[in-house]
Image (cartoon, rainbow, N blue to C red; front, side, top):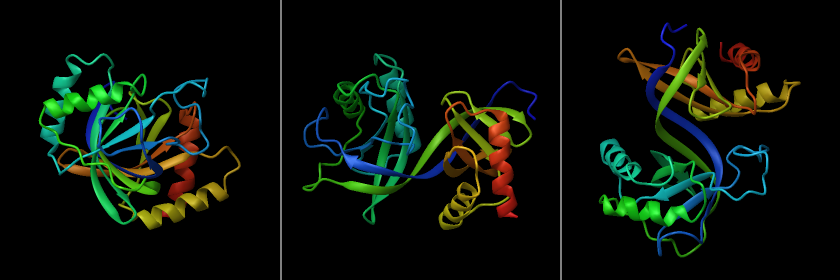
Length: 237
């Protein structure tokens, strides 16, 4: 367990979500994807009132690949004046066997802010891909690059200090996506408690890499996350 209260790490997450083209409330002729249900089965991620309309996960599709420095500097400059403390991280979306570089946006207050945010990035030299002729909708594999602020409660078990109800646990080796999917199905089908959402990833530390699994569950706690970890570890070994 870490002696420091929180750990800052940089890494990746790989997950699957259903994405669809956002048609309204965006800059004209730009390509924006939305994940209306980022955690299947959990409709009240932001609020106990699901009728409230907020953007959950928004993906601004880029015209070309930008470096982490490009996007981080642009985001930092926009945050100095933007009215909402949004979260932005670069990533890649694979859908319909096509790959798109994106900026994933979270924690906007309403859909009207998307246009202003796009304008801010364009002012910083970031260009967006034009809207495709046909609406895009379907399951997508998403890889995001992100910074984590973690609290390690017991060795190898972490809780996110920014994103509510997100926990992580270390695993001994890198899993392929298919292997991870198979293990996740096995865990869920042999699980008496309510289902969770899972993603796979890693973070960097000490000039090395720690592979891990991310678990989302409303009101997650150490007992729940430890039990999930045990189910996974029985099948990874």
